Amino acid sequence: MNIIICGTGQVGTSIAGHLAMDNDVTIIDSNAERVQKAADTFNLRGVIGVSSHPDILEQAGAKDADMIIAVTDSDEVNMVSCQVAHTIFNTPLKIARIRARSYLNPSVGELYSPDNLPIDHIISPETEVAQAVSRRLKVPGAFDVSNMGEGRVRIVGVRCDKSCPILGSPIRYLTDLFEDLTITIVAIIRGNDIIVARDGTLKMMEGDQVYFVCDETHMARAMASFGHEEPESRNVLISGGGTIGQMVVKDILNEIDNSRVTVIEYDKDQAHQAAEALTAQTTVIHGDALEPEILNEGEVNKADTYVALTNDDEVNVLSSLLARRFGATHTVSLVNMASFVPLISTLGVDSVINPPAITVSSILRHVRRGRVRDIHTIIEDRGEFMEVVALSSSPLVGRPLRSTNLPKNAAIGAIIRQDEVIAPRGDTVIEPNDHVILFAARSAISEVEKMLSVRPDFF
Image (cartoon, rainbow, N blue to C red; front, side):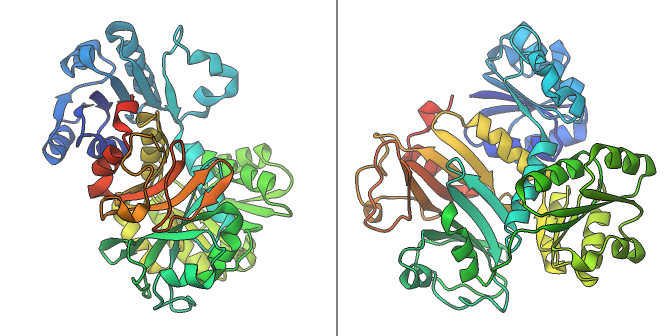
């Protein structure tokens, strides 16, 4: 496929890395240095210029492009790039990242249509981030949570600390001890290595970051097996009263019973706006979350979870550490710089939300459409969870899993057959039209896609 990516920020370059292995990718940006770096890193074409300009799109090969992904820092450039690609070059698929709430208001939904602004898929990072935060609040003992299979399956990342009751136990211990527990450990991040859990004798060690897949109805038992029996976070203190903060507040009040939310906002005007926009169930404090007296005013010592959602990564991390020091049970921090993410968990922050990584997952979900129903990239972009509809032509279908040639850096986490969630075992047989939840390390993604015979159905 011929794909044009507009923008060489964190999202643009990450998407380029995912797609350049199997597609002809051209990236556009007005920053020559970043274009050259992306071209050298991923072996793709680079064009210097503004992606909304017709001549620049033509240089990028828009006449033959199957898809344009516009993820520049400007909503307007992204929208016009899609318009020009559609009107002048008849590009079949247009994806744009749009941040401004005004453009996303349901009242202007008719704006995005073939007769107006022909954007096929709109990516809203703020919406995706707010949903990710809400999932963490429902499973406070996890550092990563995602839903697949229309909510029937949970993908969970949990850290093994010294109090973990199954520390030192082989991963098959869980299924041997709890035969009716639908859970599969699929990957372990240990230091700088990622281990795909295919051998039941593999033992979990202190400091491991473990990813497992389980039936949504078994979540409480699954988390308890790792020593986490915390209920949903009902008393939440949030730093940052902007768009994301307000969306998280509304999600909490709508989805968690008997919840109580306090918001700290540094900017006085924004604090007033948040107070007016939110309900009486929410307290808004004007102040600096790095000041202990402000955290104490927000009763941080009573908070089930402290959530840092300001626009400053350093403020988010430092205030999370202060909140933990002053008594918050759990902490969640929004961090945009991907290079910070591996360091932060070692400092004591329980969960990190990385907007670029979430946006990449959302874009890939639309790019790899057809038989691929959902995608979730794990921390540090080391691999992907996929929900795939199994085709009868796939070599994984119709025979026991132990006799298939699934790449060693891939593992199947669950199989959804109608209303049943099945934990895969060696004698499990995948049937046509099963929804397969699998994990593939970055190096194995292409091979896994071919095995599932999804490539012809992608586009």
